[in-house]
Image (cartoon, rainbow, N blue to C red; front, side, top):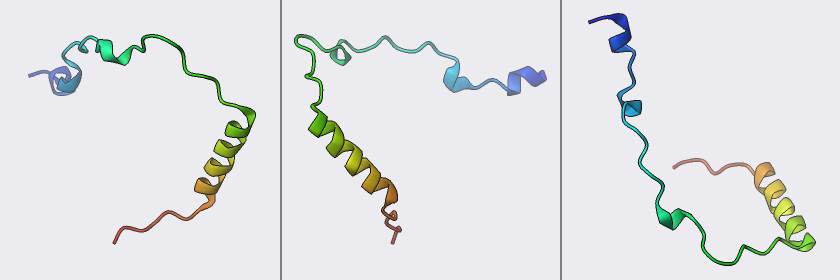
Length: 57
C-alpha cells in the first residue's frame, strides 16, 4: 500500500447526491424585512452575543 492510499478520505470518495426538489422554493419570494425588523434582529443578536453561555450540567 502506498502512502497516498492511506490519505484518502473515503467520505469524499462518492459523488454528492442530487439536490432535493423540495429545497427549491416555488412561487412568491419572501418579503424583505422592514427597518424595524432589521433593528430588532440586530438588537437580539447583540444581546445573544454578550450574554454568557449556559454551562452544561
